[in-house]
Length: 196
Image (tube, rainbow, N blue to C red; front, side, top):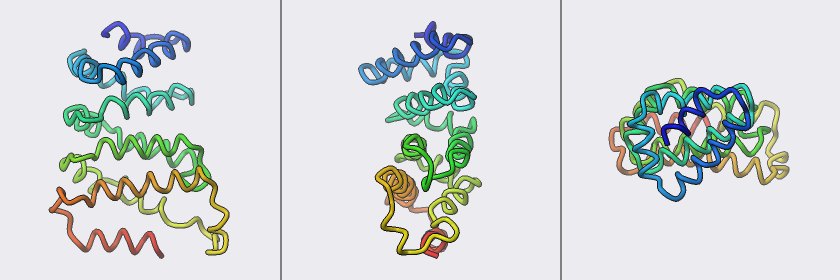
């Protein structure tokens, strides 16, 4: 597994890198705990995975979103390490660069799903996300685009609806029952920002 992680970080050849992705995602689906452990134990393993989100090639970046999402499920250590190494900011940058949930492609849903997976039952990540600029960006993304009227709401595509629901799932993760530290005023501010 260390060799596959090396290919992710050191190979400039697209096909080697893409093949390594495919194998790692398959391993993550069949043996998630072994792969999570390998990433944690490999020197700069987490950094290599996170760097995929910064790749200028769209397909590498998109596969990186899927791999990160699969890796963090059920592993609070990976969730925390990725969060504190800037994964939230990188993912929100992808969402904003792709024009958000309104006109962006379906990969936006994968980006929102990665954020949700990193927040799942992880109070420290929830607090970190809520206190970061990402929370304000998310609230801004959830409001209707300027000039869109209510009658235009009937023109929503399935991708747009899917992206929006994935974004709302992030709020659900932050506002879940386990996170009792969240002040009611913050909840109301977010909801007011969304509906206004």
